[in-house]
Length: 143
Length: 354
Ligand code: SF4
Ligand code: SF4
Ligand code: SF4
Ligand code: FES
Image: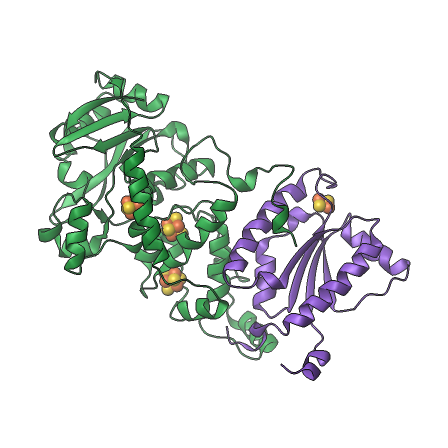
């Protein structure tokens, strides 16, 4: 793809974030007027452990250009250990995605409620990375 | 481990003994019907056949664990089957789809197996039992073992409660791996002595051969490749139904979201412009790979079950092995080892987050 086309490309990114940390961090980024690209659509989960890897698969297969997940730092889950279990599931699905060269479109982070700035910066770098990757080829496919 | 030496001819008596002495209430054992071999559920000892010709027959019909999946009965069921089948049963115990107290798992050595169709068709050449030399010889004639067997590293019996290991010629060793297994053999009044059935060198050789075969398989390394691989899939979900470790009472892909029809399908077509029919091959298989990612025992039952001859071994066991590697987990090995998704370490896998 030429440079021009790349510049026009505004990726669609689906984000799954934990209510207690990253979702609050997104709020904080907003209330403290941190600017970040509007490409991500955020879906709030009550805990990392609610992230069913099928959500990631479905988003990617339906053409989301990027998918991210973000939860409380390990050891800081509101429900004590939800993110420890989530980390294992993510490791498994990432291994599968990697086999098919899809793992580049899936990112995961730990962002706590107080890290509004980190959230804004993460959204910036994420959007850049996904722009680099270009549109998800699944978008136009008949599946 | 403690065991006893036997001859092939003794097996009939051993199995009958299990029923007669009340060690088990019933037995699922290989059953020979003419040229072919399947299973039977035996309640009365007199129905036990002279089983030598069936017990080690290199024929795969169904995964025996799939036959008892979800059985939650008090009666004790003895299951005599190949390593991959017993491994699946062990996973089912961990998944609470089978009660450890209600089964006696008896594993036989396996040499690699043919699909039951190939076995029946070529029974004259294959016979009742094969070894690796025979397998290679038959390969020359175009009679090949299942791909899942070619890449299987766990052909020697080393899981379950009791193992039946074949030695030279007519010799066998039967040994207890668990207290339950040893108790059963003691009840049969076998005189048990210490046995070493580790067979490390033999296992290494099998593993090396299996790894070489695996390396020779075409790899599915892109989404395009997977799409092409699944092009003929009609989403009949037979691979799921025959998989011993796919156990949900109500599969997502039998529900409206996973199996859209009518208006739901029109909505999808509206969203994407068009949908393929049948739809959802990628979603179905990628989800299933994830669902069995830690528990897949590589038995190849999915591939055997596919009416469209899709070589599913190249998808399921090949990829799930990679997931099992990151958790250092070997499905079916140890009934007391927790399933990877039910456990965690506080510090681990950070490389998987990025
Ligand atoms: S997968 Fe392994 S244990 Fe199962 S039938 Fe094949 S060789 Fe035997
Ligand atoms: S996915 Fe296939 S190879 Fe794996 S356990 Fe299920 S049927 Fe056997
Ligand atoms: S058995 Fe074959 S055709 Fe049926 S769903 Fe599985 S891969 Fe598709
Ligand atoms: S509550 Fe945030 S990860 Fe569990």
